[in-house]
Image (spheres, rainbow, N blue to C red):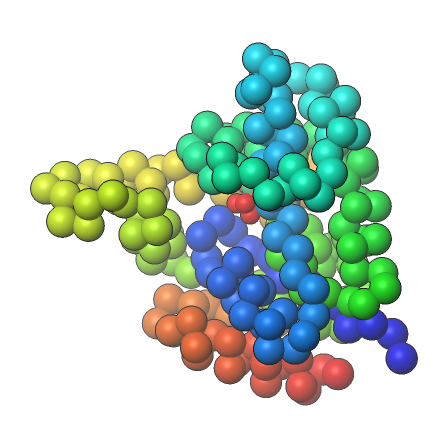
Length: 211
Ligand code: C5P
């Protein structure tokens, strides 16, 4: 029997990470947040004083190890942008394909990203595409980041996050290589009106029906 691979894709802050982590835990599968790979490359570019849009990113991608993914400075706005810029480069993506496939080779896994169901594991038996409205995604991302949930300029802060998410999604969906896209055989889950528990329950139902 093949090790089970579950591919989870979708735009930024739709709830992929939360679902993927909980699904992996429930099913006893390894979990890989593939966005961390691109974030780690973006981080290395910024640290080296290099422009993330240049092809020096290929060289930095070769140096990535799983230890790079443990860094605690990968989820800052500058790295959001740098990750998206290095991720648009075919050479960078090619280098990271093996890392992702090898991760799940022996014991299967849950992987979340943008191209898991379309490029990395096109034969995965379970593919989920997680979406939520731009407003819901911006509010959730802001709640994760905000130091002060009662900030007087709360609305303006959320609007800023919404603009950043929209720009990154447009770049990720509009790029020539491995654009953000639902695989034809992916099941769509819109998480707008759902709690994290409900999303997990729905995903587990889909896994059972497909395995
Ligand atoms: O998922 P996360 O927001 O951490 O990903 C950061 C960036 O990495 C995304 O905006 C996207 O450009 C890139 N990415 C990708 N393919 C993946 C995962 C992430 O291109 N499988």
